[in-house]
Amino acid sequence: MEAFAKAEKLDFRYSDDDRLVLSGLDISFEEGEFTAVLGHNGCGKSTLAKHMNAILLPSGGAVYIDGIDTKDEDKIFDIRQKVGMVFQNPDNQIVASIVEEDVAFALENLGVEPSEIRRRVDEALKAVNMYEYRNHAPHQLSGGQKQRVAIAGIIAMRPKCIVMDEPTAMLDPVGRKEVMATVKRLNEEYGITIILITHYMEEAAKCRRVIVMDKGKILLDDTPSEVFSQVELMKSVGLDVPQVTELVYELNKSGLKLDTHIITEEECADALIELLS
Amino acid sequence: MTILKTENLNYVYSQGTPFEKTAVRNVNLEIEKGEFVGIIGHTGSGKSTLIQHFNGLLRPFSGKIYLDGKDIWADKSQIRQVRFRVGLVFQYPEYQIFEETVYRDIAFGPKNMGLSEQETDRRVRATAERVGIPSDMLEKSPFELSGGEKRRVAIAGVMAMEPEILILDEPTAGLDPKGRELILNQIKEYHKTMGCTVLLVSHSMEDVARYASKLLVMNRAEVFCFDSTAEVFRRSAEIEKIGLSVPQIIRVFNILREKGIDIADDVYTVKYAKEKILEYMKSGGKLQ
Image (cartoon, rainbow over all chains, first blue to last red; front, top):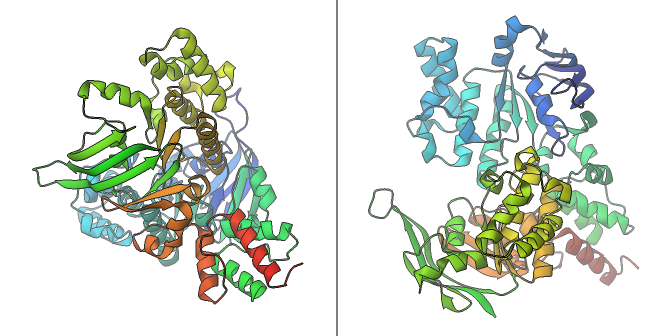
């Protein structure tokens, strides 16, 4: 299958005399995939994300979205309709004073028929469980609710892919759960490709694929259990692993031989029960 | 010795309007000098409203706040002194940086306190070093720094006032794991060397579990519990019921005990979990 999004030997620098933020990066994302991208601040992950809908253009190499080269200026709106972006701060993404008007904003700009706008806005708000709040003012909502409205604004455009740059960083645990459940459903029920940049290891542990970036390159690209089993490598690039993975690592240092691929509570409890009883 | 005490503290927002909301209800607390207290609770539980009472930014609707045994509102003209003694670092403090250089931003608080130039200079340099800001960075504009560096400069600005009580509202929000650990370790170090009292508001249970010796859990404007970290996490089922999560390691140990393994019920850090498991194995003769 042809990859939905693909970067080939991607180089990027912000200005000519600056250092390379991305260097010779090769990566591809299949349609329908759910991928987490990890890396410490400054590793280039947000820069990569901004290449996915042509906010940034490569300094070298190329990025293809659904077969379209992002350097093709005539196709830039096609690309942005295919790939939506959600950012960290929900307050910076909401423009209207009523929730449903905010969700309709992009559709109005695209010149979609009013009846079709109505249909899509309702559908998008239902998809993120915010339909009841359609007549609320955004400032009356919690952070998690605002972030879900921002996501509804994106899905109303019917994108094939959503790139999320730390969408839960400013939310409390309840808001984080709401947003993560929404994103998961969009992926499973609507088949939307998700690229999730996050600092929360437990969110990454739930994805099917985890990419670790360091110094503008891809360091690891594997399943969460393979990635997190490399505890020392992860810590050396300023990242963390789930508590249970760390516990297994620590116990093994004391001479036990537990499976290093444990990343969930259940797996950890099962292994410990076997060990202790 | 009690350094901070509240008595039947109540606070209501927008009183007399349809949006009236009790944000803090009947809070009675006694915080000991030198303690490191973690404050947790979901959004809207009253954490931020509560801590803004501790340095007199908010005046209680009813009830009293005592700092070192003195009612802070007994003499309104003294409230400025209270703000020097109780330092408050807000969420995203880097948005409050305004000075032209890092040095001047950190010096702002000490200068306001009326300290001599010499003492201000000593404190700026000592605090910068404490939060890992190299001396050549002091003459830079704070806006040239990275997000994590700006955050540390903003925290240093409050630390340089050397408050007896340092309160931080989610100092690690939005940082990567390395940045989180760096800031928390610096706060811990400050707590240790200055012997001051620290109150840390956080959404991260893992973080408060590692750093705080006592936890204050807020729920629906009230104190849900205030106890040692181990005692609070022993009530993990109730804590989850009010919509908070507990560290992963606690949930694992809960499963173990449900399955009939007789192991400690106050395990909340990886280090302690490791000890307990190895101990259990030794006592069961499974490990020599």
